[in-house]
Image (cartoon, rainbow, N blue to C red; front, side, top):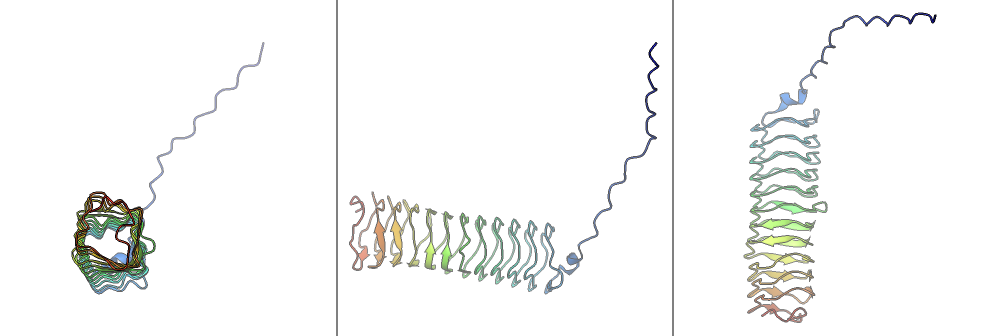
Length: 275
């Protein structure tokens, strides 16, 4: 007869579930959240919930603020130079005179924020949302990493924008009244219902941009380039084009150039349907 099978192994003794790990200690940087604070020695505020915080006049240079929520915070005259603040929320925040120069705010949201006289010089603003933000008098210089920026409903009246690449930007209902735009590339950008009154564009490019139906009366184009630009149905009455403006293969069907001044430029080096 075959030998009997060995008995099954005894079950292991019962053990309780292991205890969850202890909660991490509180972030010591949070204790500095107050007006006129200096975060020079404590630079980590990532993922923090700082809604409605009072951080006016604070030094947040080089602080990590990625995915931080600063909704409705008071950030007046705060400095964020070289800060890492991507995917952060600044919606409804008061950022008047704040300095974001060199900061990484890609994919962040500044919806309905007040940014009067704020500086974003050299900042990274890929896919940043400035919808309905008040950017009057702001300084937007050297924005070479600024693709797919949303400026819908933003107020940029009197704003200085220069040496920037606003590729595939969305400007729907944007206020560009009296804005001075110098050496800005708006390639493939969308313009809808923009207020261009008194605006001047110097050495700027609108290649493949959609300006169809826009009211560009009296706008001054000094140098720059418009290639394959959609100007169909646009109004360019009394607009000025200097001799150095390149107009190549634009769609001017139904456009109105009444009283437009072409200073040394050929008036219609494009579709002759434009009036």
